[in-house]
Image (cartoon, rainbow, N blue to C red):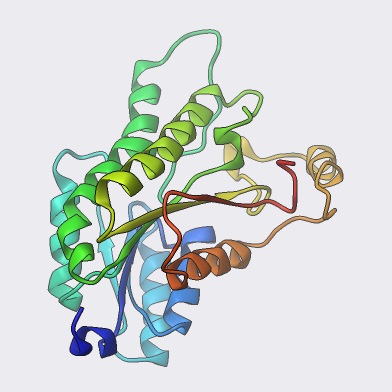
Length: 249
């Protein structure tokens, strides 16, 4: 990497970055000096508000890209659009994910395909498409996995399988892409409570907190801090950093 590249503003593409953990990652990286490309699918209004807020802090430092990651060949388009905005790519954060319960009464092929397309195939395709541009900057890929990639969560068998696959993808690509590109993952515990059909009642939330050694619920900011820590430590690759208050012990 030449001196000009070292001094240039770093650029991060974060998928699923309009809300919750993704938005926290975008804000934290922006605060650290990154230009951020905020990918969204359905949450366009939230993504645009986030970009507007960040651009008010630093002009032309945030950009929104709306894409359905399940569409074939969209990965190359997304990477190309990020490069058109910023001219380089230093970090890819594969955060976009579907979290749904498994219907054990009847197998649903469409649900299975959507889960694996979003949680496994999309990160893989994006990583392949981003590789040469990340390599030019000695960059990194960070996948947002889950502590339940190793210990299954009741009622979420299909989801847990996708995160197990993403964890293996992290390790496999770390070996394949080295030494030019590092690949790591962050595995959240109880950070952002599930929404809508997956919402947990107060009793279940309290039970989860009771099972957590630090006896508290985490915040999206903790995941963002873990992402930046992995970015800044250039001797880490192929690792999964659990941010779960000790719940996986």
